[in-house]
Amino acid sequence: MRETMRMPTVPNLSPPKPPRKKGRKLLVFLVLFFMALLLLLFFRSPLSKVSKIEITGNQLVLSEDIMKASEVQVSDQFFGVSSSAVEEKLKHMKMVSSVNVSKQFPGTIQIQITEYPKVAFQFGEDGSTQFVLADGTAVSTQGLLSVVDKPILTGWKAEDPNKALLCKTLATLSSNALYEISEIKPFEQTEAYPDKIKLYTRSGYEVITTVGYFPDKMEYLNAYIQNLKENNLSSRRLTLLEVDSHADLDGTPNKEAQAPTKADDSVKDQGKEQVKEDKNAKQNTPSQTPNATPKPNHTSVKPTPTPTSTPNR
Image (cartoon, rainbow, N blue to C red):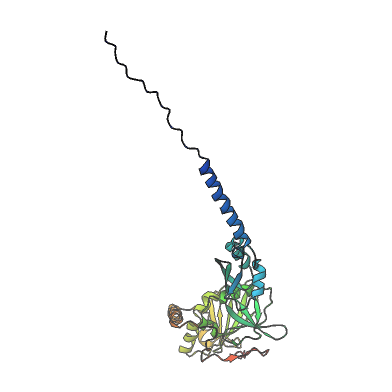
């Protein structure tokens, strides 16, 4: 018999083993090590620290006081300073209206201060002239050239809450309205009107009102005065309370207006038109810089202990 030819059998080969991952693990370890080393060197270098603190916008608040209140110092960790935390600390300072803190890498902290506006003047116990800000804070005018273009507060106690509310209200008035008022003082405060005030205008009028009524009544003050002039009334005292009336400076009611009269619609319309004109004039007036020349009708004066003259009372 013919022998059957058999093909040689080929042994089965095992699949190749995957390469070991030891090399990849080592590479990852080295990368992490060098990154940690770089971070350590960075935080020990001057680049990671506060190198400069820039404070701008402050004229009355000392930069040293701002630095102290912020609790930020040069050489502090730059990334450890929280802008919001610094703002929270500074916005509670007197005379400071708002704060904006920003960080500029490398190492610069910028603090932008906005102070409350000046709304009035007053005289200190030693006779020195002081600015009064919208938050009621008094600041000496010593060394500052000032224009007496705002009312003078007399007879007020520093802790009087009505004074603080009045200063806040004055900040809402236009510059023209502030200039028209020469003096404001508390006046015959009663249980019914615990915040009654008397103010004097530069045009020679006395106005009696309250701190609460002050914002609304002042909006139409020029219209009231203009109405008296147009009707040839000699009244020089205006009482602007719940019911508005006017009389002579000696307190005698004017014969032509013995009964209290409210401002009619025409007077209020005049007042609204005047307010619009003041707003338009304010918008069209170019912004003044701190070194701008005062208006022609304002007199630049240096602070003196002698009060500005007020209308005859």
